[in-house]
Length: 361
Ligand code: ADP
View (tube, rainbow, N blue to C red):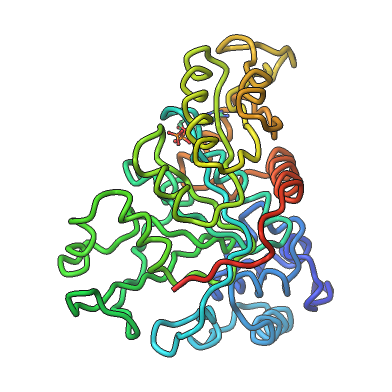
């Protein structure tokens, strides 16, 4: 029998390596961590906390599995995340940092960059949410493999000016406990869908922000629609953002378009935290030779325009795209995630905003 110690400090990946049965036990608790990159450096206690679960039943079930050699049944109450339920919910979530991710145009990999950033932040045991405001495409839910609609209930504490109940959404939880709110995760039931049909995009984004039962988060990333339309403008004006991350790629045209986006952010007197150049180059796996597929890097030029540092240059990598397209983005275990998170946290620290947290709901 495997004798790995089962304790709150036990590393999830080590545990599953020594006791493969543990993956099945954790799965019972809705902890998909063993299959995702976060598990390499997360303990049982950290994993439980991130998912809003109590650690005791998890330890007990793991010990039973270790002793008996089979996965025990887990009570419903023990595998239900302790999230803020709409019923007794009266408190307000505290979100320490809000960072919109913006791009001048579509297809530069903004959603993938948002996901990689979220993964890097989660691997530092931060509580992370993604508000998918790019509601034109299903990218964020798709790359996280989320299919179950968010729970939408009537807010017991609020009504619309017309006296109708306001919808209140519970964010979906990814395998590695990233909270996600997206139009693509709305139920297709007619009564709730009605609420979302009318308002224009900007209004919907605001609703996603205000009418979601976010947990207290360290960082909320907002995946903005591409370009400089009304929607990104509203987000920048109405949310208490720390600053924007601009995603670009090495094309002269992208650089011109990103100038427009940077100007917009500056006009609104919001900081740009940094620039990420995606699809920056390609390293041939067989020869290790570097190719500038889309041409030379413009990251420094864009950084100058944005008056902000280059946070990262991300190479073209078909493996990342494959995992993302297969809904398994959380399995990307690449140093770029940590590099992005470190650069972002440094950039946030370098431009502190008022020392208050924003209140929601
Ligand atoms: P956007 O949100 O800017 O429209 P996406 O994040 O949806 O762009 O990316 C567009 C496509 O490009 C996706 O299929 C994605 O997997 C792929 N992609 C993004 N970044 C990279 C990269 N660095 N290497 C390879 N493929 C990438």
